[in-house]
Amino acid sequence: MARAYLDHASTSPLRPEARAAMEAFAGLGVTADPGRVHTEGRLVRDSLEEARAQVAALLGARPRQVVLTSGGTEAVNAAVFGVLTSDPGPVLCAGVEHSAVRDASGRQAAVVPVAVDGVGRIEPAALAEAETRCRHLYGRAPALVHCQWANHEVGTVQPVAEAVAWCRERALPVHVDAVAAAGHLPVDVEALGADLVSVSAHKLGGPPGAGALVLRRGLRLPPLLVGGEQERARRAGMENVPAAVGFGAAAGALAGGRRLETESARDRARTERLLADLRATPGVVPYGDTVDRLPHIVCVGVEGVEAEPVLLGLDQAGVAVHSGSSCSSESLEPSPVLAAMGVDAERSLRISVGWSTTDDDVEACAAAFGPVVAGLRALRS
Image 1 (cartoon, one colour):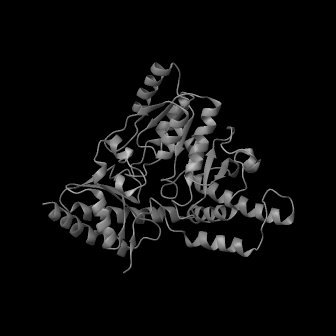
Image 2: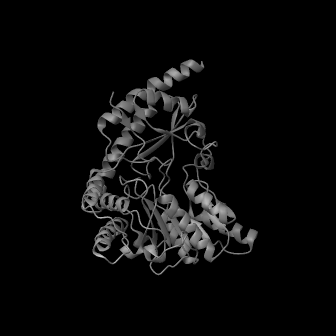
Image 3: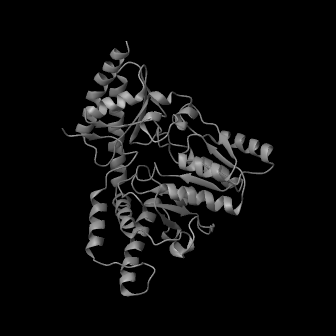
């Protein structure tokens, strides 16, 4: 039975361009440290810098701004560590931010929560209220403000440009988690003006184990990883060149022409169809903004049954999706994102499409969903 993989927001399959680039790099038969000046080292360095330039082009940045990391999680941790080591102080962070953002901040600083609305949106007015509370509680301005580009669970796109502008007006350092957005929405770091932006390769069809932290021009921060001068002394340790090459190729596939626009439009059409099909089942409600959202993600609540049995039923029908339920992840707690929104995390399903999704995948999910939910409700009654 052919399976329908609809969990691209967790990780997307490796794009053919990325696979071909990694295979071509391996085919060079060159093993060397890109920091060495011999011929082999220079060959590897050329591949690494080409990948960096491709990533920078996708993100609207200059190559020198891009610090290659082992993924989005490291990029987030490096951003938080660098800012808070330079200026220890409280952090403004909404509950809808990714756990990497929340946990990295909470480990080093007091976190002042930023309220969100019912679709998980961070409004500049909520940032202002949190800043006032921060000054009242700690007698100072926040050392760092977080505002994700778009939410990784419900897909809501944040007013990130307004949030960054608000921070810049007050000279508050701001980090933007663009892991969920990069490769699915246009991302222009230079135009945005954020101090720090984190991204990950495997969310857009690159390999796992690669990501980047993009720094505002002129910004220098203490590195999270020390013990070497790699990445212009911003991240110690020999770079994972094969993964970087794959990351660069995936970014390059999206950076030129209308590929990103075409894929995003196709993804939105498929998720709109999915959302309509799922809502045909009684008791299904959408979570997050159904209009101003990431094109490849839909999240719904299913009344009357917990999400895990629905997920397992779909899996038995050959459809892979994700749930916000604590039972379907490594966490023992319900989704903090959905809790911050005030919705029931135990009854949420996230379905996400991507570059390799077919119409047959969407049809398989739509066909299986109603019978699975109906069967589970019949068992309960």
